[in-house]
Image 1 (cartoon, rainbow, N blue to C red):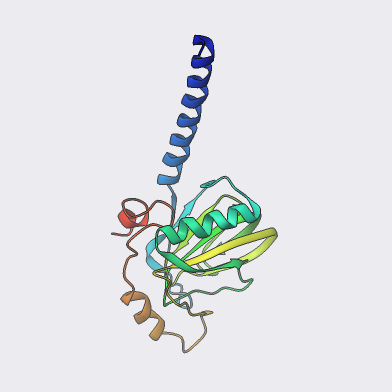
Image 2: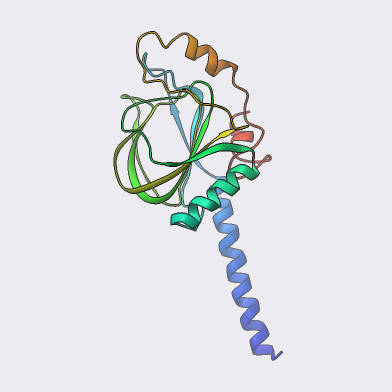
Length: 192
């Protein structure tokens, strides 16, 4: 191989490695959002985790990548769809949402929470009890999954849900792996 060709390939590989490293470092420094109990939506002492631009594939390939990545970290019982257009939360499981297509404005944490724009490439890890609602979206495609393939319930912050949902949330273990980063990083460290 000629020296100029070798250096050219080495340069491309070096750039690729640098970009991969930067993307991994970005994924390891997620945005953390904390929400207080608002009387209807219990939220959680653990922060919601938002990984921005955490993966590259979009559409069906992105959905398949998310399903495989989540399953490799024991987040299963997955589905493909969107996000409900009403405030809701789950008390029997934490949830991960991987956005593989489109975008949305999501209201997190209940009526007193925060409105956050998400788009394809983003991953949201929602602790049990944290409210979420799709305010508006365009072409939204989501893969959802649950640690250990847990079954999920659907609560809307209505009278009579609590204190049973509070007990469910308190009894949940911290997942053994982050759905994106695996057993050594992400929520494993942040939620401990």
